[in-house]
Length: 180
Image (cartoon, rainbow, N blue to C red; front, side):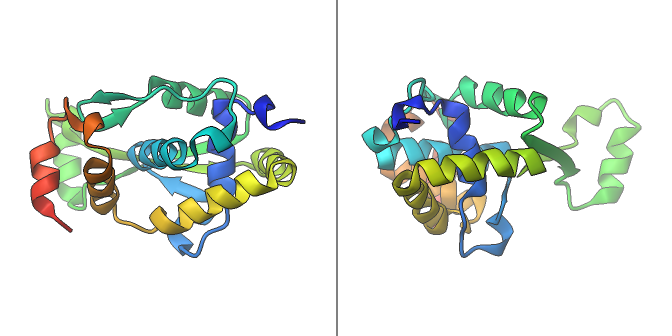
């Protein structure tokens, strides 16, 4: 298998599989936004070394760099039984969430999507990691650098390092004012 045989969903598997010094990021990624920003950084920082035949296409959007293909890749990997997803409330005030659940404002309840490799997904990701050792090492290094950052700090980093992808952002000013 050559590097160019990789497709974009393989990067999701490799990113989830990559070892890291951050216990909260070991074998999983909490949140679609975090997954999206880490994959964006992966493509920006490793660039041509990725050698992916169908890379994710990122564009400036409401919350910074966005790629519809990431959502499609997650769905594909879930349907293939390689990725599991858990949704959990992010609202720390569960009483408030319960009130909203029984009101017309139920859409205000916020959920975080948490992604983890299944047993089969871990096998496939391990195979890919062995076949693409130097790439796998680069992904692990990137996950070490950014995997333990708070979501706000991760977004801040992306916004300050890649400002062209924030031109349509509805949160740019708030993020840049936060200056973590």
